[in-house]
Image (cartoon, rainbow, N blue to C red; front, side, top):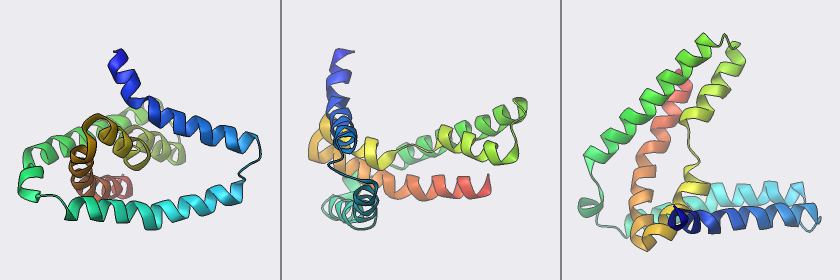
Length: 144
């Protein structure tokens, strides 16, 4: 258990440092907004593109893993919508409730954890999987 803690600790340290910098007013909301735009529209796509382009897709890609992930996400999504009905949540809250259950934070949490646990090879695997998972999850969110 402590091994897992130390593998994900760097991600939480980065989050804590960011929070501290904001509280100390070293960074402001405008900086955070522009940084997020830069990260999600430029640097993250570049990282994913480089990781995927450098990988041997035949060695990295496994349809069975994609099918398992797709099935798992779908089961959690369906259970989330059923739970929302049982709890009689309003339609506008239902979408938020369900999305928070089945949509993971692949970019901010998943990629760094894969990298810390498995190194560059793990980043390749995660990048290839993200190329399938993110559009799939987005599709479920739109349909749901």
